Amino acid sequence: MKVTAVVPSYEPDEKLIQVVDGLLAEGFDDIVVVNDGSHEGHLQPFAEAAERPGVTVLRHEVNKGKGRAMKTAFAWCVENRPDIDGVVIVDGDNQHHPEDTRRCTERMLETGKVILGCRDFNQPDVPPRSRFGNHTTSAVMKLFCGMTISDTQTGLRAIPRSAVERFMTVSGDRFEYETNMLLAMKTMSIPYEEVK
Image (tube, rainbow, N blue to C red; front, side, top):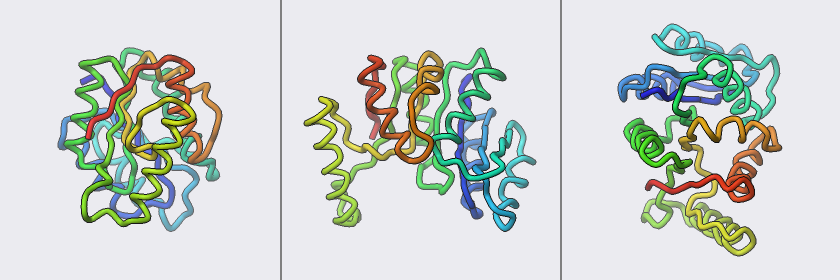
């Protein structure tokens, strides 16, 4: 797999190392962790991550937001990994199973589409508030944008190389960037699909 795993992180705990180790165990050998201006009490996980083989840690001096951290990683990949087939974004809080990250990545490689790793909000253990919020944002995306996306807030996204530079031009530096990416998929005609 010529795919770079991107892990934006701010003020992490030990879960960041669990994410990195999980990715390594699933065969990801190129991982970019972005320290988005974390304070001194949260630097140890980055130091531990940097000791792992195949892990590069990039750093913002101050917190700039998740969107900016993703763009920093994208720019680094464009400059330093020109031959990759794509990137996969993984949240640093260990909410994504490494095997799901691999499934999304493999599907992206098969199809050439952006792959959204989507959670099933109909499971009985999902809090009603989360279920309502996600169903509402999904309905808004369908009504106003004509896009059917079951998990609009997913942080697990596999992006083919052809779309990485295009996403670098999308506006937003914080969490709104993830929504703007979805809207850009429509305006830029970037094909996508979901993997549960």
